[in-house]
Length: 614
View 1 (spheres, rainbow, N blue to C red):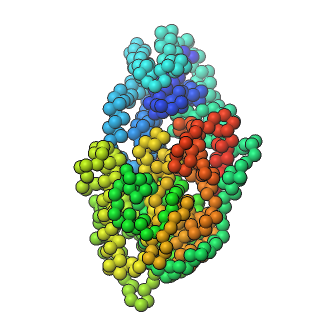
View 2 (view 1 turned 120 degrees about the horizontal axis):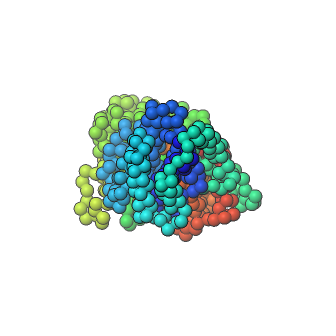
View 3 (view 1 turned 90 degrees about the vertical axis):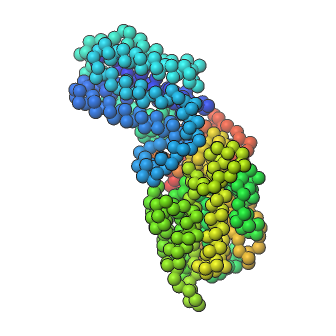
C-alpha cells in the first residue's frame, strides 16, 4: 500500500459521493460536492487498504462489508429523499420495516417515477460491490475492476446535473491517473496508514469548525453524524418580532370572555391524519369534498391560519396534550382527568410505532384504543363499529351521576400510502398520489360522520363540543417537498382548526397553533390550565411568533426548521442548504443570502435551541 493507492481509493470514494449527491440534490445548488465531501472520501475510501495492512484479509473483509452496508444505506436515503423528501437513518429503519410503511410505500407513484427517471441508479449497488471487492482479487484483476468502476461512475457524472462543474471531474481523473501510474514501495504503507488515521481524527475534530468557517455539509458526514447547525450569534440588532421570538416562554393562563361558556360539556377532539388546510374544499376548491367536516366548519369558530408547528404525528400529539414545545409537568389531559373528566383516545393506527404510544401514556389518557384492540387489518371505517363497542365497555357509567367525557379520535387512512376502498373515477390525475390522497380524505369524512352520529345517538357523548384539526399536513411538491416531516412549508404545517357547539357563536380568528387548542378547550369548560406556551384563541392580542421544526424521525437532529415572525415566515433547510423568507402561505418566496442569511439563521437557530428542540 502506497501513497498512490490511498489517493486512488480516496478519488473513487469522492467520485461515488459526487454521483450520489448529484442525484439526491438535483435542482439545488447543494448538488455540487463540497470540501467536507472530499475530506470524508479521503477517510472512508482507503479504509479497506488500511485494514488489510493492519489486520490482514479478515480485517479487510470486515471493513469492506461495513462500508458496503453504509454506502447502500446512503443509496436508500437518496431514493427516499428524491421520492418523498424523507431522509433515512438507523433511528427509523427498524420501525419503518415493522410498521409496514416500507412495504406499503412501494406502491406510491413518486417511487415509480424516480426509478423510471433514474434507471442507471439501480446499477450503483453492483458498482459498489465491485469496488469494495477489488482488493480481494489479484493485482491485475483488481486494477481492471477498479478501472471499470471509475469509468462507470464517470459516466454517472457525465449524465448528471453537475457535469458542467469542473471540480466534479477531479475524482475520476485522479483515480484513472493513479491506476495508470501504480503505487510506490509497499513499505511506505505503514506511515501512510498512520497518516490516514490522523486524517480521520482531524476530520472528526474539525466538525465544530464547519459552523465558524461556513463550510458546506457533506453527504457522508451528515448521514453518519449529527448535522452541524449555523452559529447562534449575530452582531445585528434584533427587530421587535425577533425579540418576541427569543422571549417565548410559558405564560400563566388568562380567562377570556368565553370562560366557562361550555362548563361540564363533553368534548370530541378529532385530529385528521396528514390533512392540510388547503386539502379541504371548504378552504380550497381543489381540495376534497367533505360534507361532515363542511357542516362542522359552517357553524364554528374557525382559524384562518392554524400552525401544527411540527409536521410529525408524535410531535403534534405532544403539542396538543401539553400546550408546550416540550413536555413539562402534568398535561392538559391529566388536568381534565383531575377535574372529573373520563378521557379516552381512539384510533385505527398502531400507537406502538414512532413513539406515539409513549406520548399518549405520558399525557395520561384513561384508555387508549388502537389497532392492537381493533385488529391488524382495521381501518377508519371500523371506528364507528368495533371502536364504539370497545369505547362503550369502558364508558359504562350512565345516568344522573355520569362524569363528563373527553374523547380524542385520530384517523389513519390518509397516511401514506392512503387507504382507499372506492376511488373516484372522475378526479383529475386519477392515478396520481394526490388524487388517491383526496379519495382517502373523502372516505375518512364519511367514517367520521358515522362515528359522530353513533357517539351522540348512543349517549356515549352528550351535546359535545366538537374540535377539528389535523396532526399536520401533507406536501405534494410545493417548494420541492413531498409527504410530511421534511420541511416546515405551509402544505405541511398549516392545518384546519374549528370549534363547534350550538352555544358557541361562529366566528373567525386570524391565527392559532396546536399550542392553543387545549388551552382554548379548557377555557370554554371553565378550567384554568397550567402555565404553557399556548393560550385561548379568544384572546385577540396573542402574539404570532412561533418556532417551527420538521422533527427528526430518522436522524438525530432536525434538518429543517424556521419561525413565524410577525407577518413573515423564515425557513432554513440544512439538506438543500438554503434559507427562505415568505409569507405564512408560502407566497412571495425570497432566498436569503450573505449577512441577511447569517443573521436570520442565528436568530432562528437560537430560538430553536432555547426551547430545547432538536
